[in-house]
Length: 405
Ligand SMILES: [Zn+2]
Image 1 (cartoon, helix red, strand yellow):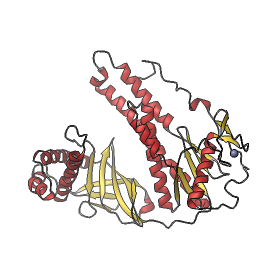
Image 2 (tube, helix red, strand yellow):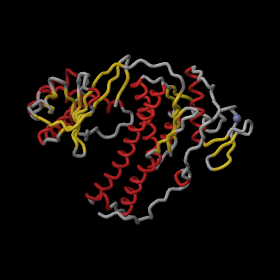
Image 3 (tube, protein in one colour):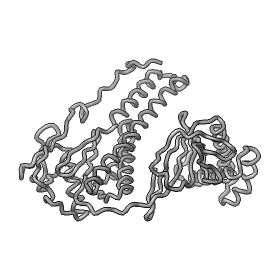
Image 4 (cartoon, helix red, strand yellow):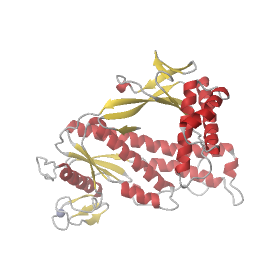
């Protein structure tokens, strides 16, 4: 995760540490204390940090045995949670934090030394691995998180934002459900999306859920191991998609930097919002919303981090207008379009890419040496797998499948 600021970037570096029982125990104790504090803040309707301190500090120290510094962070965390809940117009029951996560301050809360992370209270966690590229930057506050058997200390760092270079051309990124197509007017590369791969896990989860449901009661809810299996499938779907959204943008951004090109993508806000408005969203729609939102976030972040200028362009008509003469294209075959006026013909994905590039060149006022559309020397075609676009998915048969429990 990362966010930008004037001239400075804040990023979190994940440091994987050994999940020592003492560390897990502290996180659990913190979590119980946090939920206790949220409840008390809401019951007594506490508003200011001073009131919260007066009501909670001693209890957190004495009843929950939290070290002083952690107790302070714990009630701050609780107040933030309580405030968010109070301000939420659609709030339901009181919030309960499930995630095992704890804020730690560098120095007073944690220290990194000789291959170990030392946590307040004398807990030592062995460092298993981390991203060494940011070692020269100072460690700031961190968050210790324990999830699915893994313990990670997310350390926040501040780095100087690099100066943007002057771009010669644009690497345009066209995103669709099937693939990410990127390049300039000659380069044409693509990366498959993970929507299908993630969706397969969702389908497995659904079929399992259906198999253990009857008209009278949802039996799958009662069987712990089935429920766990279903949850693990949902989690896998999410992980597959997150991994893809995180790992694809650096490849694209590195190409742009190598060529000293800017990066361009469509503004997907409208699309994402309209998908969000759909009632009774199916799993696939949910995956698309999540996938797109994460992907564009990481594209923007890598552009910023590497100093690549970024253009976000209007998506309207990018896949139906002729990139040469702006006429409306006509379909000539499977995902293939042709311009009735100038004869230009290409794949839909490629057309999207060329139009995004064209709009970005205009927006960034770049005049590439060969003009906006150089003679199309490279074959403007991407591989097409007809079974992966538009056609209905092969869903597992009802109640069928080969799920062994
Ligand atoms: Zn044309």
